[in-house]
Length: 162
Image (cartoon, rainbow, N blue to C red; front, side):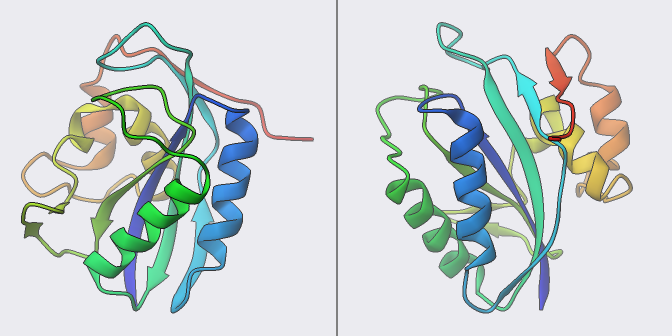
């Protein structure tokens, strides 16, 4: 089994419900065990700003799926939840980003691992810090240190569901 981290984000079609549905789909992935999930966070959009805030989280999984097979499974979950890829940083029902796959490095036209921009995004780092604060992001430092450098990014941890 390989430790992986997946970022989740949604800002359309009842984002909380989209995240909950994604959790169920991730728990049902073959050859994959659910390990943990972070808190939920409300975050301002990055890039294209004229859209609703996002709900974000990170989950930790253990998987026997190869990186590209896992990516395909994540994209299928996005598709079944209505993801439309209209333009970069567009609003979306669900975004699942494969952040980390063990210590593997992959760089091809379909997949880059570790995720190339996670070290500069508070909406990824804050939830990831709950699960793996000392994870070394290959040349960028530990998660907590990267998060400390993300000053000025609008992110709010949501209260736990009752």
